[in-house]
Amino acid sequence: MSYQTYDFMIKEIKSKLNTKIIGRKFYHFDKIDSTNLYAKKLIKEKIQEGTIVISDVQTKGKGRKERSWSSTKGGLWFSIILYPEIPTKKAFFVTMTCSIAVVQTIFELTKLKSVLKWPNDILIKGKKVCGILTELESISGKIKYAIVGIGININNELDEEIKKTATSLYKETKTKISQKNFLISFLKNFETLYNKLSVFDSDYIKSSWLSYSNIIGKNVRIIDEVLSTIGKVIDIDDDGCIILETKNGKKIINFGDLEFL
Ligand code: BTN
Image (cartoon, rainbow, N blue to C red; front, side):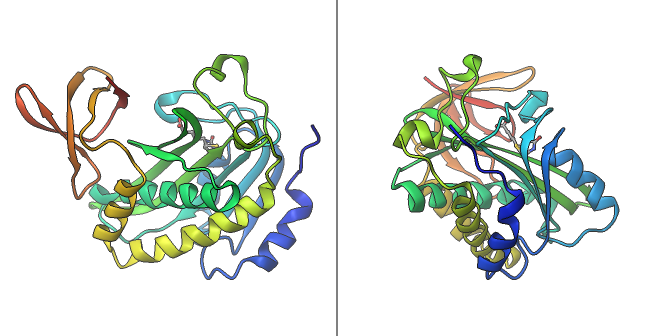
C-alpha cells in the first residue's frame, strides 16, 4: 500500500479548517521519537494553544503506563497543546472531549460505530483502534498545560503482537481512509467540544461520553499498579472517575485498566 504523508497536506488542512484555536499552527515531521515529547519542548517556548505536532512515523511512540505505541506509516499520530482553564481534578474531561471527537469522526468518515472504553480507549468490535495519552502539569490545583496525544490506526499495518487486540479503519472498512480528511473532521469536531469544556459544560460532555460507551451496568475488573477491583459499573462521577458497586460497597476508581468480565 502507498501511504500519504502529511507534509504536502498541512497547507490544505489549514485552509479547510475554520477553527479558531485548534490547528492554527502545525509542526510536521516525517519521523520523530514522540509527538508528545516534542510538544513538551514547544510548551517551554510558550507555544500557542491548539498547536498540533504530527509525524508520519514515531520511533518511540508512548502509550499509557509507560507502554510503547506502535506508530508506523499510514496511521495518524499527533499531539494537541492545550491550556484548559479547569481544575486539575477535572483533567479527565480533556481526554473525554477528545475521545468523543474521535468517535464522531470515525462515524462521519466510515459510518462505523466505535465504542469508548474507560479510561480512554476507542474500540471497534472489541478491538482497539485509537488510544489517547494525556500528559499535563498543574499549579495550585489548576492545569498549566495539557498535551493530548492521539494515535489512530487508519491505514497502517498492525504489528504482529497487537493484531489480536487492535484494529485499523482500513481493516474494518477494506477501504483506504484519507488521513487528511480524518484530521480535518477531527479537529473541527474537537474544537466544538473543547468550547463546551471552556465553559465547563460537564453534563454535556459526560452524557455524550456515556452515550458512546457501553460500560454502565457491566461487571468489570479494574487493575492498577497494586490493586485489582471487581464490581459493577454504576456511573462516572463529575471528575470522570468510575463508580463501582463492589461486594464491599461503592468504590470510586480514578486510574487503571478496565477488563470486562
Ligand atoms: C494508549 O496507551 O492507549 C495511548 C496511546 C497514545 C499514542 C499517541 S500517538 C501520538 C502521541 N505521541 C505519543 O508518543 N503517544 C501519543
